[in-house]
Length: 230
Image (tube, rainbow, N blue to C red):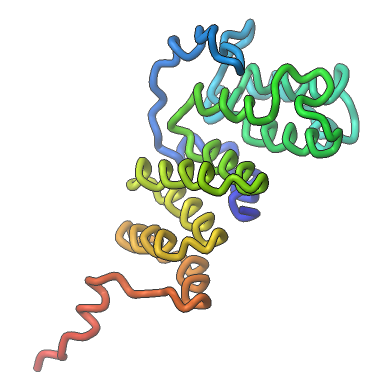
């Protein structure tokens, strides 16, 4: 999971291009007044974190400063208020979701001071807003794993695996999580899919080999066993 989080920090500006996923209409989700995690309507946004760079900068300069992200220096008030504002404007703001999760752990309160929702609600809101965002689903899966809710986590990971078959970044991140969870058969499927797309990721191959679970794809194994023609 650390590799996924490093990917988020290192490639956040380019994620919209890397993900190559379309965003569907969200008007129905915005007005879901019966949802216990609140509707998504907001006076500013909501915006997709994978897009809207200008709006993202405005929000981050005022509310999601480096001090807020590190939980060391407040911006306009309690950390929960500024992080919550960021997540109302950008429900799938990856780093803000991670920071809110750390704030819950730091304050030992869920929701933390000045935040409107629990951390699980913030994940639910993000998925409701952009259900095709595989990074959000994998972050949520990691949250669930840490809370000993493996079955629920696997539902999220499996969903990403099956709905992003043409997306190498998503398949790689999913394979990493399967490997960490010792779901070796599923990690092998991800590794084979990446090979078929022209991506030979040694970390998956090496991890599976170390566990004694690596198997060459059928086509590769067959070609290696064929006798050399004169």
